[in-house]
Image 1 (tube, one colour):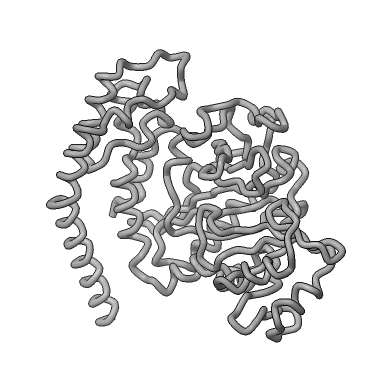
Image 2 (cartoon, one colour):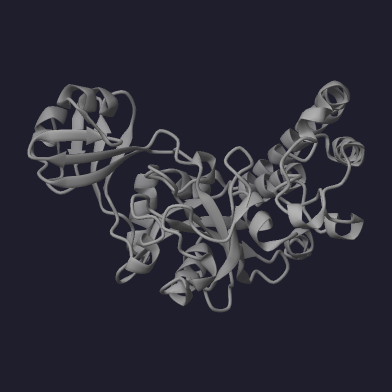
Amino acid sequence: MLVQNKKKRSIKLIEFIQRAKFNILIRPYNLFSFLFLGKNYCNGRSYYPEKGKKKKVKIWIEQLIQTIKYGYPNEYYFSYGLDVKDKNERSTYLHYATFARIRDSLNMNIPSEVIILKDKFLFGMFTQYMGVTTPENIGISENTGIYDTRSKETIPTKIFLRNLHNDDLFIKPFDGQCGAGISHLIVSSDKFIINGESTSIEEVIRILESDRYILQRTVKQHEAIANLHPSSLNTLRLVTIRHQRTGKIDVFPSIIRIGTGKSFVDNTSKGGIAVGINLSNGNLNRHGFYKPEYGTKVDRHPDSLILFKDITIPYFDKCKEQAVRLHSVLPQIQSIGWDIAIGPDGPIFVEGNDRWEITGPQNCNGGLKNLFMEYLQK
């Protein structure tokens, strides 16, 4: 108990120093920068052109107020539709700077629990122990070769790769996020294809020996989800959150991410689309949302042309039940964003994120400030 109290005091001291540094140095600098560069935050495309966009001077003033109040302009001003919403509607959206500060202060008190989410190998062992399905891990890259999880021995990387036959794998950094550093490897008749391009076994060896990676078999998706975009693993970002007073864990408004084009990942940072989910029945909302650099909102997938409103997530109740159960044995983490694929036989938990983002849920489900703050009441 004494050690835990010391940790909490240390965390509070660090938070105080960081906040002081932000208020004294970063906030004035950002405000000064906005006065000269603020027009860059006022020229976005409207996600709701049918409602009539505000004049640029009004948008500039509102972004200036956001910078004064929060220290940053609102990067998601247009995707939230703030360019067409009045003051009351705008007040329902939680600014990302405030959200990130609260999320991190509540989620990072006990690093030993957070590491279960950050380390993909530990996460696989954790979920397996809890009776929850995850992608099959077949190898771990090491300096001396590949640890084969099937034979339980380390073998040279070249031999490991030569032993693969007609395999479809993902090579993932142990602690990567947002699809960064992931490679898709297909092995067929001694031919190696990385991210859709033929390559040599020497190049695959170079990739595997450049860092610590985990090799996972590609997940087979449920037909209803695969049909949206077959070449990417389309996953739910299902958020669970613990009430500070009661300790009860609930499912927070969530989304599904869907890949587009030739992408093999569904991340919106790579051009994917996020669509809100009706938590009561698993039906998708009418519209999906791109990040601003890729587009605005659409009512159907640009490649498959499937209308989002016609899709219901299979096994959605089971997804919610298992996510809450996993969160219940991580009592020191206040909120978790679970990435869940839907297989033919049920949910497959790909990873858990302590540093999940509220941007997607707010884009797709509307302002969530009041609901998020309710869970913080003691």
